[in-house]
Length: 132
Image 1: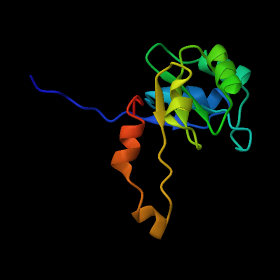
Image 2: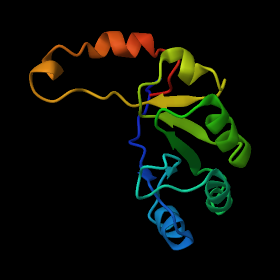
Image 3: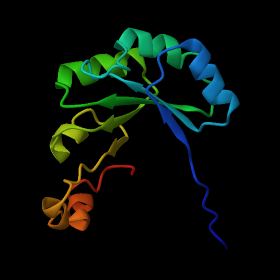
């Protein structure tokens, strides 16, 4: 049996209904909502919930967090219960796993010389529970 792989597309940082609708029409597999208040594309958990309700059945909502408290993550999960979580800050594996939800973990690789010492395999092993 041959395993077929398909590139999946996530469009992130959407804040308006028209943009969510356009992403779906363009074929996005996932749509991300930024719950980091320092981002110009930040939305509240409640707004993320409103926007996520526009998504059809097979388009995954993703909630993006940066160094959020467990309370903030929980609030996001309550607003968008079907969401995949994505962590972009200094979260530990335990922080990411605390919500007991599927999640993605962004690897922040330093630029220049420090980046050469970044052990991506160890990072992936540390976050082995992540979906990507």
